[in-house]
Amino acid sequence: MENKIIFALDIYDHDEAINLAKNLGDKVFAIKVNWPIILENGIKIIRELSKYSKIICDFKLADIDNTDKLITEKVNEYNAWGIIAHAFTGYKSLKAVVDSAKNTKVFSVVSMSQESYVDDITDKLIETSKKAGVYGLVAPANRPLYLKKVKELSGNLKIISPGAGSQGGDILNALLLGSDYVIIGRSIYNSDNPEKTLSDFNNSIRNSFNI
Image (cartoon, rainbow, N blue to C red):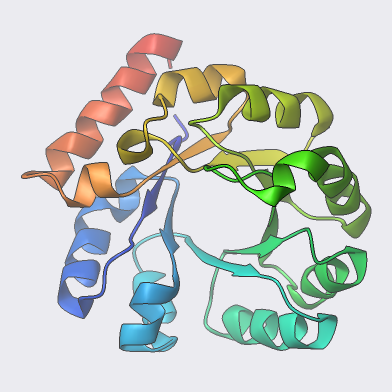
């Protein structure tokens, strides 16, 4: 069975991050890293973590095309499996990410897990994302109406969903509404037993979907 959980490793400590990756990396679809761990440890930690799982860099790129291109090329160099960019910066910037990504999968943010200005232009952001050739879309597990809308317009693009667990979203409901993978972080790494917590999540998914 393909794992449906992406583990968000939103922490600072190097040793804790490596230990969690070692113990959980083969039990999730991928590990997502954000700026906190990179700012504390440097970009080389992407390569270290990639020994244990696919790594998605949640950098939410939102700059001019050349800057986004440079960041994407560097992320690719350090063996990231995926990278997340905003779509609101427009086609030119998003296409620069896609063109420079090589084998790295590009996911574009078309709806946030909290209220934001992009709510009014989600349709346009999906259209721009398709035109740019992204691999997948980011849509919220904790805002069902927006997730459903993204699914209806997504075509064959993959959907990854933050907002489950600590942000109130329901994992199973998100998968039913169209998420391919649900992103969970604090509910796992802040628990007393991260391995058991992840196992419970995985078992719940398997039992609910008979997989």
